[in-house]
Length: 78
Image (cartoon, rainbow, N blue to C red; front, side, top):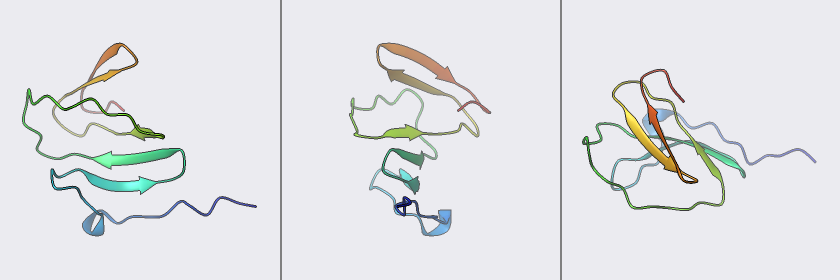
């Protein structure tokens, strides 16, 4: 049986949280999210999810903390 949980989401119609996180694509093991206009230096609470989340930096920078590592992401990084 094939996996039918993958759905295309058009960015203009994507669901979003109250803090602006947009849900772009989701499957059973992986999700892609988009954040726009995040304030520099704003600390986010630590979260845990039962799936992996992926992203791509278009502009600005992101500091990712995961599994005891800190990774600085810049435009073009994913």
